[in-house]
Amino acid sequence: MDQQRKLGIWVLTALVVGNMVGSGIFMLPRSLAEAASPIGVMFAWLLTGAGVLMTALVFGNLAIRKPDLGGGPQIYAKELFPKGSNLSILSGFMSSWGYWVGNFAGNVAIITTFASYLSTFFPVLTSDKTVLTMGSFTLKLGNLLTFLVCTALLWGMHIIILRGVEGAGKLNFVATAAKVLGFFLFIVIALFAFDKAVIGPLDAPRYDGNGQPIGLLGQINNAALSTLWAFVGVESAMVFASRARKQADVKRATIAGLLIALAIYIGISFLVMGVLPQRELIQSEKPLVDAINAIVGPVGGYVLAGLGLISLLGSTLGWILLSAEVPYQAAKQGLFLPAFLRENKKNVPSFSLTLSNALAQLFIFSTISHSMAAAFDFVIYIATLAYLIPYLISSVFQLKLTLTGETYMEARERMVDGIIAALATVYSIWVVIAGTADIKTFLLGVVLLASGLIFYPQVKKAAQQAKEKQKLSA
Image (cartoon, rainbow, N blue to C red; front, side, top):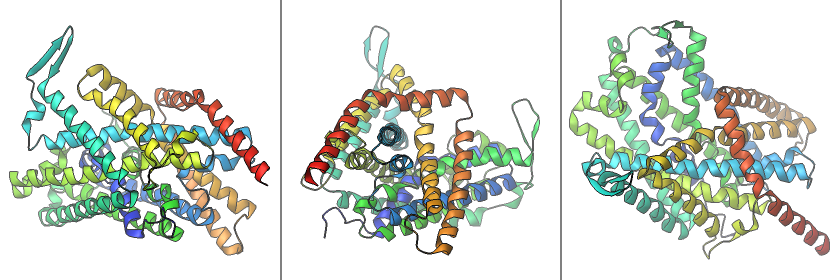
């Protein structure tokens, strides 16, 4: 058996759940309660769940029909243009570039959140005691310790992954299983404490910044944008398709992971509304901790903080794996710099992993400097397009296959997949438009993607050399 094809369905499912259910779950109940009434939240989940399910089905179908195009949804960009053309190489590289930058920058957000939860047990991480002063720069003890913790976590995960993707995947499975059990336990406890009187009228009004009431459709739109970010990571199994034991497992893992994450998100967001009064929930900076404190007392807060640490450990490992795999698989398709093809003896993309983490380390300096923090926030802010466009690309490519009939033998199968692809495309277009409605986000996102043009000549040269070698060997 190919040494790389070792990831089974459970490990792939854990990657999907682990990457989807990360730090966002702890703040989602507050943002949803603020955005919409309970009935608005319910419809938002239905809308987003249905849209992401269509996208997940697209991912699964493509993994089976195009197994040679592994590495993530951004890879399909090159297939939208004539094979080997400049447009094909450019679009594939640009989408892979943006997706990669968004990934390693997003990793830092998870790692710093881990340090935040760790401060529950070690308050010294928030200490304001001055350690060093140089001109206008002042280093606080808490910031220094946070920097050290984040650095240790990043490179600790680096060492674990270098020992093998399979071993790292199994460790991620254990962390994900623990947090899924923990969240379901939270749901069970919250069920007993749920109070209809606390959640209030299902159609309770919501108001905008000017005090004007927001209609149900407006509430659904606002809440759906909040729920959207809960699903980033649904493509995780697809990124590792080339390492899967069976291509069919990629589709099964994507659907199973989505359904598990959806059950956790819906259960928690609704139950917290029935435990904490709306005014208290909207003002809460840690709604899950406040909810569990209201049910079982302060000890619950520590238990939930521990669950948060486990959750973030799994997410950190999963997203670092993903960050290294994306440019590695793109390089295998001739869409990234050839250096990213380097592997160690365990078939781990060592160069890609090291460079991704080195760049992430630069952003970890944001924990000790406000100027660096601003730079980090800037990259996170403009990474919106990097995550959303690959979803649209995949849907359009699946639609292209159904229209041309490529890989299809049966008309009925082709028609069903065509409907799924059309629905996923419509949803993805809405997501891109809504997620980048702010012109600043859109323009800066374009700048992020365009920054990769600096390296495109090298990618193009490598692609041409590979093409010449193929001709000579033929």
